[in-house]
Length: 476
Image (cartoon, rainbow, N blue to C red):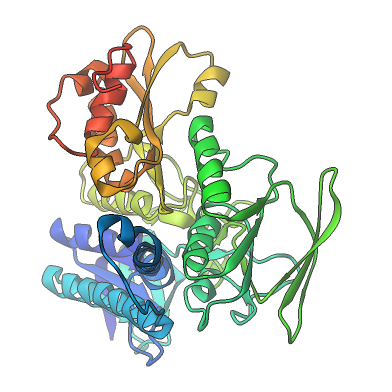
């Protein structure tokens, strides 16, 4: 018996499940098809983000930071820890518990909002505008029809050519989160977000970590002042060995571990011997098995679903969001697109501002930014003023014992409108929200400078950096 819906979402990650919930809130009959499963075969809603990405990585980052603090930082606070020992199995168990709690939370939200869930791999099976057929392979075999389909199938880790992931020696993001014992020597190919976060986790737990980065520059997407500060902290203070301009020639797994042969500009051929190797060189759109060819859904040369500015595909009533379309591969970007598409389907005016999507790297110190970098403004010929304030001069940061980094504001030289905010320091992921709100409301640096911030708080560094734009900081 066929089941008909107003909206069927293929994919239950951050973009997909949020789109289904918002559609249901707007009075549409909504369903979601998702194939993620636990080791026991039960549904595991939340996609890559919840199961092997954002959520478990943050759980391990927190656990590993606690371990490092107990071993190094607590004595300064007058806390003596004797017999400190690592129980990695318990740490991984806690990580899995956090994941399950998020899985169960999405199931609850579906029930609360009356979203119908089908467990299986979703694909487009035919039909036409207003009556698209969706198949859930591995599910109960129901025939599903939809007036609108939202493709939210996410992305997969990009492997090195000729070096498949086995998640025993050569690890993707999932394998990096489930190493059963701390490796003595850990290799990481790619010094981007995932490489730095996973490298940080295992370094804190005792591994000797080397990151091989193909690019000649470190964190080129971030503001240069932030990148330079991060380089100093990660390499000189924390001991991460980061090799830039590494051209990988060969990766050879063996019984003893993994050998990586590479070369650097002016450095000749080199070799890295490691127990395990994490490969984090980007992600590719997950469109295999979607049924795109069968319904003539247009994909670009890289496999992304082609969409317009409002996430419409070339097929009437078929939309696509998140990692499977253009734009940054960020969970919160996918969520905003999911909400916007659901609202457009319901006849509202959904909105996503790509200029105010925040970026975060959850290392210690954290790195976060929104808007333009200083190098972008220079290349675009925009006249600007910069203001910067160090956490070293912030009372709350001193009390926390973490004074690394700074807040940097970039504002238009004529209008004073905020063009970008860049943070490296404690709780940067939380602090960046103020900058996002300010930029959404077209605030000026003076607007932030005039706002009363609680004392003592890390957020005072935001006020002081805004004041610094006009060279009138109060605590420096």
